[in-house]
Structures are given as structure tokens and as C-alpha cells.
Amino acid sequence: MTTQAREQWRSRWGFVLAAIGSAVGLGNMWRFSYLTAEMGGAAFVGLYLVFTLLIGLPVMLAELTLGRGARAGPVAALGHYGGPAWRGLGVVFVAAGFLILSYYGVIGGWTLRYAAEAIWIGFPTDPGDHFGALASGWDSLATQVVFMGITIVIVAGGIGSGIERVARIAMPALFAIIVAIAVYAFTLEGSGAGYRYYLNFELRNALALDVVVAAAGQAFFSLSLGMGAILTFASYLPRESHLVRETFVISFSDFGVAFVAGLMVFPLIFALGMANEIEAGTIGALFVALPKAFLSMGPVGRLIGSAFFLALVVGALTSAISLLEVVVAATIDRFGWGRRRAAWISGLAVTGLGVWSAFDLRVLDLADSLAINLFLVGGGLGIAVFVGWIMADPVGEAAIGSRPSFWLEGWRFLLRFVVPVALVFVLWNSLPETWEKLRALLGS
Ligand code: PHE
Image (tube, rainbow, N blue to C red):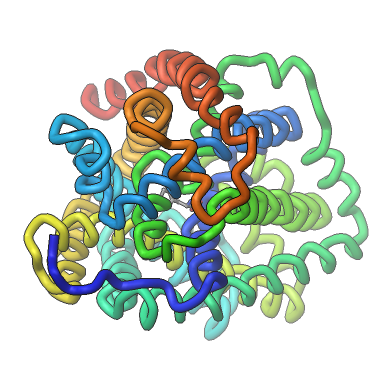
């Protein structure tokens, strides 16, 4: 622990917007849309909402409580409340941050490239080939390096003058853009088919095991839970902040953005006859179907498309910042380095690991499965057990700054019983898919 005073957010909204910035990202737009398409619409969305409420909210409050209370990065925070043995869980979090950011930076690079091209060149006439050419290989590496460079510079700038400053401008801009596009999509002829596809509920899908598992993983990923990102951001909070309120604000904003993103993506795609593209449900779907739709809309499409990819860049960047911050905070705690040094060294190390994903989409896909199914869901399980069973007085700690209420006892009950049971179930049932992907990659 350094003797220097710990950095702090400058304002309540600075923190809230930065946390929403962490939550809202590629998960809400890219991953949410392609999974909703692949998993059959509203059943997936409904389950994702259920997991957000039942598991996301309790784990979010648990991370906020740990971070604010310990005022330290993930490893030191777990050590603070649980003794040396629990530091290991914090190390797993840092590893998860490393792994996720390694491929997140690659996709972030794509969004940067798409935004720049939309603005300066326009959309390509052959989006499929175009995506194929820039998604892996040297092009992909180049955009990943640029994206990571921007991320590192912002994190090196610190909490108040780097992360908070960016979030305060970027997040409101992102909200405005996606709401505007969703409203515009509503006016398009033929958009009705998109809403029907998106909001059509089929019970059969809601009961399918793979849909349940995917929805749980998506809830963790989208809320930035299970690897200490929210915990780390909370470690820069003043003691009197109202954690229960922030839990709701952050979680509902995140769900809201994903939901609105669906109201934007599906009507657009269906109105312009690109339905079969998205139904393929692959990681490239959004990057192929949407440019096609934008291209067929002429100059308006160029404008909307530029705004869309700009919003995607903003979302990706503010999430990448929080992923890197986990690694940086732990590095500062551990080695006592300055922030600048910690940001550059860990940022470059993450970029190095990401080279693998930049050159092979299957590695990227596998990293995504591993990170979410094992690390985030497993990490969420660890947090629930830790705060529910090990931490001495989580209810008292969480209540500081909030009105004490008996709901917090309900929170502890969820952490002790409901969350662990649900997550063990999800973890167990996700193993076959992850294993399949690993085998396919190794076997080739
Ligand atoms: N929540 C981010 C998104 O939706 C991704 C993320 C996961 C960020 C975990 C931080 C920690 O894109």
C-alpha cells in the first residue's frame, strides 16, 4: 500500500458514467445483437433480463461494497477482507482482465476502422469480403494497436482527469446516438418485421439449456461483472456514496442500452432486407449486415452508419479502459509503480497477447468463450461466496451511505444461496461448448 492519497472520482456522476461506460460496450451492441439472433429473439432477451435482476444486481452490489470498503485493487481488496488465501481470486480477476482485453482490443480496432471508413470513404460494396480482409491479419493487428494505444493513454491519465473526463462526454453522446437511430429505424417501411423478430417470444427457446447458459454469460459480460472491474472503479469512491442506488442506476442503464440497441439493429436490418445475414449469428454478422443496410440507404445511410460506428467505438473504448484499469490498479498496488508506467507496461503486455486473436478469429472466439463461461461466471461465483459467506459484515459495509434496510438481508440471502446455485448450474452446463471450441482449435 502506498502512502500517497488514493485517487478519487471528482463527482458522483463522474463515477456513475464511468461505470456505465464500463458496462455499456461491444457486449450491448455487437454481442447482444448476434446472440439474440442466434438464440431466437425475446426468449434470450427475457432470460438475460432475469439474470440481470437475480444475479447481476446482487453481484454488482457485492463488487461495489468490496471495492469501496477496501479502497484497493482486486487482489489487495480480497486480501483485505479474506486474508492471503483469497488474494488468489483477485489474481484470477486480473488474468481475466488480461484475457478479455486481449481480444476486446481486436474488435475495438475493427470498430475504429469501420467508423473511420464510414466517415471518410463510405461503406464498401462487398461488406463480407471487406470484413474478411480486415478482421484478421496485419490490418487487424494495426487497428488493434491503435485502439489499445488510445486506451492506454486515457488510463495513464488517471481516474479524474483521464477516465472520468472521457466518460462524461462519451456516454451521453452514445445514448443520444443510439436513441436517435432507433427512432429513425422506426420510421422505415418494413421495420415491423424487425420488431417481430426481436420481440417474438418462444417458450421452447427459453427452456433450452444453451440459451440459458448464453444469457447468464451475457449478463455478466455486459454488466462487467465477475472480474473486478466494478470493484476497482468503486475503490476510488468516497465512503459516503450510496451503493444500492448506484447498483440500480448502472445495471438498468446497461440493460436499457442493450434493449435499445436491439430496437436499432433489428428494424434496420429487416427493413433493408438483410435478415438472412444476421440470422447466421456469427461474430461478424453485425459488421457485415449493417454496412450492407447502410450502403443501400444512400447518403442518409452514410450519416447514420458513421454515427453508429462512432457510438460503437465510444462504447468499446470506455469498456476497454475499465478492463485495463483492473490490471493497472493491481500492478500499482503490487509493485508500487507510478500510474503511467503501470498503464504502459500492462497495456503493451495485453496488446501482445492479443496478437494471437488479431491473426486468428477462432482464437478470438475461443478466448471469448473461455473468458465469459469460465472466468466471469466462475469469478461471479467466487464473489458471491466470498461476500455471502466469508466477509465479516457485508450488510453493514454495504449500508454505509445508504439507508439501512432489511432488503440488504435479502441481498445476502441471494449471495449465499441463489446466486451460487444458479452459477454452478451455468458453469457446469457451459463446459461442453467451451471444450468443443478448444478441441476444434487444437485438432486443426
Ligand atoms: N461490459 C463490457 C461490454 O459490454 C465488457 C466488459 C466485461 C468490460 C468485463 C469490463 C469487464 O462490452
